[in-house]
Image 1: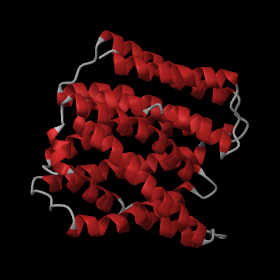
Image 2: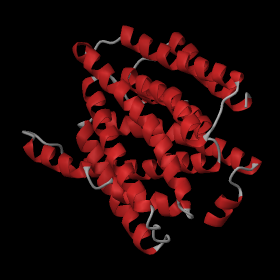
Image 3: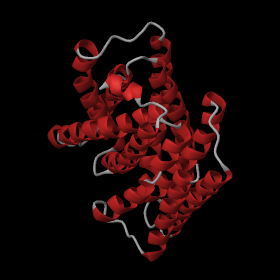
Length: 300
């Protein structure tokens, strides 16, 4: 599998597979965000997810994939630092703000800075048509956030703080997307990066989540929380694994933009599972997001 992935990098087949993987990541990332924002405390949800994928990834990292090359360890150190800060900011944003307001702001901030970062790090460029697509997509995403904000009935008093955390989280989305793309391209076997990424990435947040759990006056039952964690772990493998592989196969910026159609799927999830309202205006804004992604894809 690793040899086949390497053989199609930069080819038309690689481009098509990267497109599929980026869209798959969009669907799954929206589901992942909803899992973290659901009925459990976001810190506990994130801790349960992280410890689950850490334990699942460990035997693969030790016994299945090739061991990382020596130059990968400083890269992994950078990956861990970036992702820990990202997850702290994301949990703070979800704690302070409504999911359908926070999520679009996070996802709208990320792709713009990812495209810029990919230019400086990988020399990637967008055509004028693709930049138009980015503008259309961002207009839809931020329009959706503004509409949700206007109709917000809960957590309105904490909205300014939530927006601050959401923008900061979006900046770290861009940072981890470009840095992870650098990391997965720096090793010969991409599955080595993925296995060790999920093991190392799951080491930190569960410790804080456990301490938080023990301090709660009425902590939730651990069984349902860990079930959510295991489900979230497999969603994370498919979601983050897909987008990382897409960034190895093709342009980082295009993959990042296509992933942000997750905002559309997040709105659907918010309506179906979190009982949040979706009306014709929001449907129109979601169509704008999808249109922007299509323009980026076919404007290259």
